[in-house]
Image (cartoon, rainbow, N blue to C red; front, top):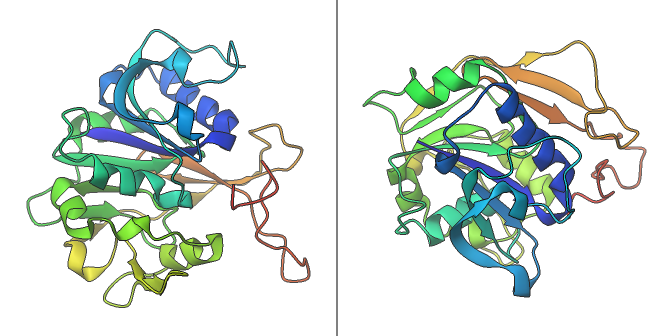
Length: 257
């Protein structure tokens, strides 16, 4: 299994916190980690290659302690499509030996990993021969485990760029009608579209009681825990319809980033 972390150049802070949580639970399978960073400049972009953690960060030393000599697989690309950037990169590089696997665990960089994740990643107890995609009741924060065949079916579906509003809409849909129209007129399907494979639904998310400013932005995020995945997701809640720009976040001020 490969752990795929979808990120963006502007989200170095959440990515650092995410990686630190892997250290905290004594994660060791770093060679099975694929990090995709979208929105990069052309001159710094590259396909899959092994790099030490220290090369991910633009600052000389991250704000948390990381074993910077561990090697992971890194893709840096100018392409960006919010929660779906890494899905597109998986398809484009599926034949690369650093990317190829039978099973992929897909997360966003705004998660932290709990100790239960180790059993999920190493033993994947919920995986069977009857299903292709494993996720939780919607909305699922676009967290899922899926087999290689799913990538072969969705192909370049995620090359069509979406708005954050459209991404959130897809996060709440599954089945034959789980799609939106991109600006170019093409249909973009949710990973839970019926044509991509049989879906197994795991335990629902558990909401934590308190909010936390985990990224030190001055604005608290809500958190929820996915017990079958051993993952905690941090969500910046929308400001409401009275705000003229309700889709802004707390890191850059723009979800488009």
